[in-house]
Image (cartoon, rainbow over all chains, first blue to last red):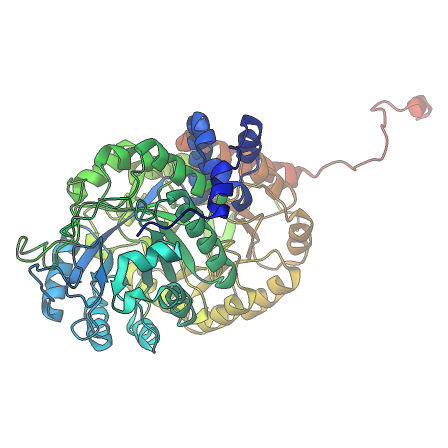
Length: 364
Length: 260
């Protein structure tokens, strides 16, 4: 569905690249206004300097500590069609929604590994993963999991408020891409098709009292991944300004192979990825940066020394996958297959404390 | 009665010879933290209750690494209002048996600036429940008076934004607070280098609390020792009483000395 290139696109393509002087100025005074310069190919020769500066900022703000969490997939049932996702409605894959009791069992397995911060993840199925179901999950986990967050479909009713009342700490909504046209191309059906509904969901959650907000984009989904990085940084800082009581984290996963067979429009190289993470750290020093097991071990180990403050470990992206792997479709393949204990040992060897618990039960 | 070097720091009926309080956050490992705590010579250590995991007690929880001779000062870090702070303090007392609590109410995760209104409310409630309350607070003389009147065991005004290592930015206010206070004044937060601690002690603070500056130093153990020495030096300087600050030079042997 390629369209003729517009005059503005041509203008953008012909914009002169930043000069070395401009890159150096941006490094001297990093800000949202010059994030584009820091992300540009012209800044790539300065990658080491960028990383050094980012490391300083990360240490100053977050110390030698990295928060650990685990995703707990509760369901891969989905009523939305997204061309890149292994849970997409149209795919003929093994579907499963855990019962609340099964969610508790999976959580107990994760707690036994040391985790105290859990992220409940699901596809978009408002019948199987209903408001009441999520409330019951959060209430069931509350006695033994100090920090519970969700990454589910978006909600427009009182769901967030009820979940906060049940003890929810955080909510994660990836916009996937901030490019509206591309968003419409890859989200072909279901509630997720509504770009504005999705974008507003983080605000709804904040207004309902959700304390930790996660946002992100899936790099490689849209052609201009740099624009998505900039949009995520802008969004994060905007949220911080408007909801001063909330903590904001960002995640910039690179799209991974899944049952969908989707191929990224553009690959983001490892060096570009490091550049993006370091640049975001410099322009948004107070934002937590999350890195999942989608990325390979060597990259994760490097990025934790530069910008990352929160990591998952030993993840399964399949509902029920911690106790009964192989019974349902996973969302995507992970790269870093080390156990949580191995990731913790890596952090310690690198001079960081693995923080398993940095939360307290908010209710009950 | 003039203060002397031998005067202990008195907090809630307990007596301490060290005037350096230390924190336990941001260290690269529990083992390094423990070494730094020992090197600090400190007798009071604050621990965030949100970091304590009683289900891991004896198996590597942060509390296992706190030297047993130190007095544990649980803190309510992470609480965003009085209700949460009170709730955390109760959990802390149930868990550790300590009735001391360092009250922290910080609704803004960016600045971690203490909320004066909610802090005062929480202090009043906790004191009514029998806690000895050490409130982290803004360097505000009037707020410190309110907290003292409410029955707090100390006041703990900030030297600069927590974790910022910016030094004693609130010096003018601290001087006023020290002059008026009837309870120990512990300058908490922002002290970045040992000379900052010395400065706070020189202006008359009864003690200082240091965490980030030690935890993120290249060598936390060495930095802990440096802060211990600086705290003591500052205290000595305060007790010794400084000479007058003059506009112009004054010779140490005045020209008219022969007349006497």
